[in-house]
Image (tube, rainbow over all chains, first blue to last red):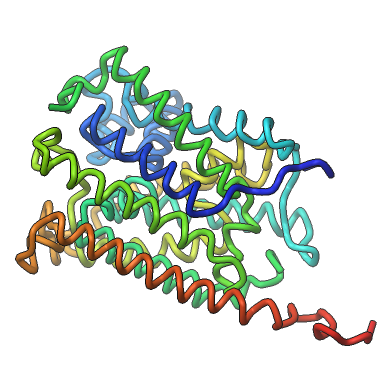
Length: 171
Length: 206
């Protein structure tokens, strides 16, 4: 991030833009936005290179390999798109830069270890929940799905409860 | 009514459309500031409620918009793919996810926007998320009992309480507006509260 970085956009403007994108996804694809499903597929394909039989025999991942390449899936295309969207937006705003972002009291090492551990929990939680903040909370929430709000409530309650114990990472 | 049936989502045209939608998704996330894990986690210290503002305004815009299109017969919401409700699994999964969110600093979508803006911690987080997804695939059998509790399939709150879908969407909008008012009040209060280890506001102590 450089000194000329532009400020973030108004959250309601960004939220409305995100909402219209979600609306467009429902109209065009017949389904909402998502992210964690593609991450699970990429993980499965990576492991498949090392241990094909055990991945294909797995009841969760096996079905993804039955119709050919698991990466030939709209969620994977969407995930790749979101990477480029983030890249182009940050570049245009002068916010792009290779960093390990952390609070003023955190070491890069502790931040990286926490990122790995937190990522693993998010990976497990998303699969158990059948989705993440994109596919379950946002996309399901727009259509008032009960499970989406159960997930949102549990996610925020847990994060607020644990936040004081990891304050050093962020503040 | 949709351009693609659910079994056509692997066609090149659908994949191209998904790529463009993903690009817009990542763009809006980064514009909102969600390519920054410090910005994302600030809500959990009550300081910056952008996560709530962006999420609920997006939900309300898409929800009211979809129901408006449905009223004009332009979208058949019964044909849309929506995530199933599994109350117990999503309560437990959401708890695990929430801990991972505040420890890791990202959720999957925002980590992609963060990686796109150069955050190495997002790359590590995504590697962790892949490991977690694989781990779940092996431990899934232990959750079979849990997944059956409160497994309601497609279950909208408006159907459950017996109101029109548009009424439900407007209800969501009203709840969102109330949440925004609360968020602004908390933010205004927290501006006068010093960070731990920081000199109190207005004090000249070093």
